[in-house]
Amino acid sequence: MSDSSSNKLTGTQTMNDGHFYFISLKIESNKAELFQSSQNLGYISMPVAEIQSRVILYVGGLPDEQETSVNGGHFKGCVQDLRLSNQPLEFFPVGSSLNSVVNNRTLINIAPGCTGDNLCKPNPCQNGGVCYSIWDDFTCSCPPNIAGKACEEVKWCELDPCPHEAQCQQVYQGFECKYFNSYFLWNTVPDFPNGSNESFPGVTSVF
Image (cartoon, rainbow, N blue to C red; front, side, top):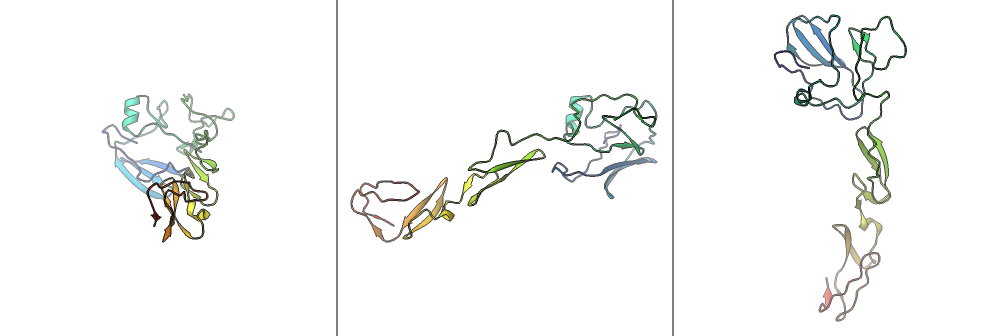
């Protein structure tokens, strides 16, 4: 919220985490106070204001795009039980109400219900992970021995891919089987099960 002198009243807590918050704005005397539930988030001084008929109230943005951008951009989320002086402001009235404080309403990019973007299409989860869409984000349920936000990290060494005489070491996008005190004949091909078969020309030992 801002007044004619460009004083802004803003909260400091992030509220785009998919949870509902009870936000209230109390205007009395010459100040406006912002609350989250019963917690006072601050106030600004302003001229004495009285809400009268034919007053235009903007929710979620302003007609001027530049001014909206300066004030944080358009609201993206769900609004439930919006009230003015304890009177409900209904975006989609069920029927005609004699007690309604809104005579005319203009809705832009407003839809009934509460549905966020489906970030699981296409599926961002790798290695057989199952995607679950949450508000403006996603979470992956990864198979065993798989980690990372998108199940991109395979914990290869937990799968015991190396022979018992070798030690597994995780490397970028894979693993290495390290043999200690093992010797190979000239130009032989050591066998690394589930890993890679590589020849080492000119190498007589691998430590």
